[in-house]
Image (cartoon, rainbow, N blue to C red; front, side, top):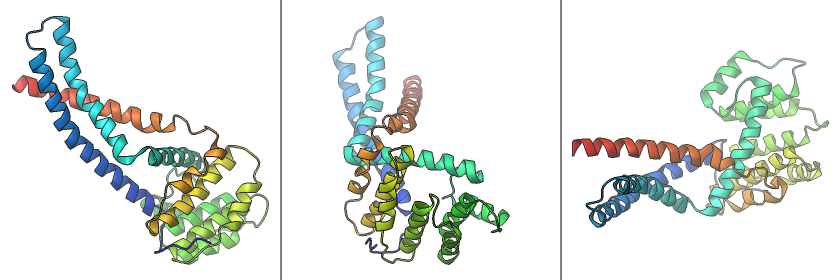
Length: 267
């Protein structure tokens, strides 16, 4: 049984994590600026009088000091374990986003505004695809309509591969209502799936569900996600690098280079 210490709604943990990442970047910016400025001053003094290629190399070494310090500090303030968990969730989230996009034309059903717009345009109808019913239930939960979401769960097939989706959505509704939820049926459904990408995604989502409950109680919210690593089997490798670090490093380097040359001209 999972028992939250307070009601949990979809997106609460993600919003907290985004706030933590923002604070980490702020700390890395301030400390990185101090460290890189001090190092640049030392480099300028030690290498004063250089000319030609040597001077160019010295100038660029001072430019890249801040991005390197910023990235290193940002990584350190979050920690290796949490970055590993973030990578798993990012990877599984991409697969789920592709699924929702294919089914209902929305890549982020957790967005309250998009969810509200879609719900207004797509009332329940007899004979609709179970996939549509599932995502309607999820978006009703995002909107805070637990009873409406539970009604959609009851409309989902009880067999034919829908056991896991029913159990997962029902568990999310229980957590939103602040009630204990039995994840044994969900864990059994995940365990019964053949080794595949979908099983790996399901394992990460089960771990994320457990992590959400742990987070509401101030417990370790990383270990439950990392428990899915054996099922993922390296499928997520490189996701964080491609979707986060390369973009962040490029943005930081370009912004700092522009600031550096602007300050050089003003000086």
